[in-house]
Length: 558
RNA sequence: GUCCCAGUAGCUCAGCAGGAUAGAGCAACAGCCUUCUAAGCUGUGGGUCGGGAGUUCGAAUCUCUCCUGGGACGCCA
Image 1 (cartoon, rainbow, N blue to C red):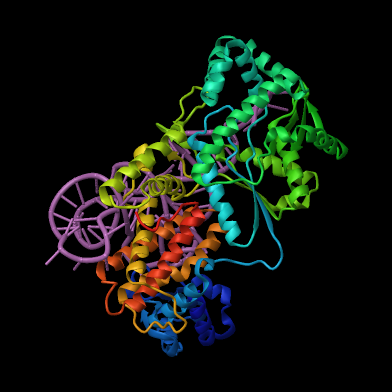
Image 2 (image 1 turned 45 degrees about the vertical axis):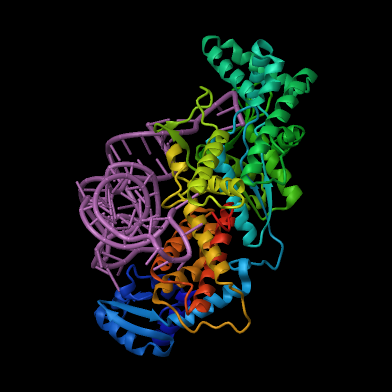
């Protein structure tokens, strides 16, 4: 890390009076390249030394070990440091050539396990844009964690239990037709669900029937169970098509229903610890500074929180996780606060490794999309359109490409995933098909295109890694690229710490921009191509690896 | 009513463990393909960083307050 270099030098000059941490905090990266590569502001030192900042800056600038730097300047209270570009460049490139796609990886000496709860769509409902967010954000966090040395367990906590299935069973018995469900399962089941809610607005007793049907389901009624299992199987088949397209796999599909026979134990545990309190016929756990957490309803049936408690305990027993994260929408923040608080009260130390990773909603006309009213945009359709558009682009721009269909798939899906990951996850997103299908500017295809350019260059230049490789020459236009490449490991670190894939997406855009600028200014396949191709190769490695961490493919040509 | 998240260019967003002239993409306009893929590159215009107060040598960034939008708040998940 470049900062560390200056920290060490400053320590030599300033002695013990300032700690490494303080110096590290103060050092910054100037906004303009004319101000150097690293800068040290002296305003805080002014009080300590009782001297004007610009005087201190002058003094430090004179005393720094100049042999390490190309140039050191004092400007208006700042010490600006210019690094030895060729030295840093070669160190960076050498590391990438050596480590290849392992560049930026971390290895833990002891085994560390992370479970991640992601995607978790509801059975019998279409896979909506909202579930896409949990799926792609979660998948990227899983990939980043693996890169950081974790064993990751991906859990698809299917929404396959609850009163809604009672409602669905009632709706199916009242209005459903077997052959329609067989023909188009999700669509037909969803229509029944929507119809149920419309009818229930007129006739409130339907809701009671729904609850009654769920109670039968939960107590093992065979008729109800048969229907439930059928709905679940058909739905999962449809979801698998989407996961295959997105290139996402799971280690567990244990949904809520899986915890059905593990709930009594949870209720017993709560009772044993004297945490259960009766309130209006329901059993609750009272919490400090939070609304109480409902454990069982008046009719004795369980709730979402009960199932999540059972799931958390099961996961700790099964996987002994160090970290357990839940990639679930922001609107459920309170639920997770309550869940963690109850586990805390139960005395489970391991609850400290748990985290809710929330994300913003997909809005339509500034408002939440309502599944109940049947107004949803289907991911399936969006994917189809994206691939078609990508194919059209390939036909126009690169008609001789060998595997057009596969490339179109990678580009179309890359556009959709990148669009979702490039912004901070807590921001709400206004749904816009046009934005998702954009392939120019700050998009996935832009990064993929840049990667394809590096591939072509390496192929044409017949680049090979040699043992005696040296970097004897560096274009000044390549310097910004070097600084970025050098920073890749820190970016991955930060993305992991903050569970924030957008850090990587933004970084890839920066690398792409820097490279495309270089590409436009410098003729790469030329007399110095040995040096230049080593940089191109490093860019390719970082772009490909970065895209992989987002769950996006890197076509060699497009 | 209480709590949580957000408000930066016409639009979408970066920047927010305080620092030097507030950045990008899209859209608009003007250029660049007889030379490595133009899904690219270069340039121009565009801002009271929601309002106000405070802390500080210094605030888009920290604190308070108000305004606006969204969400959550016991028998849905």
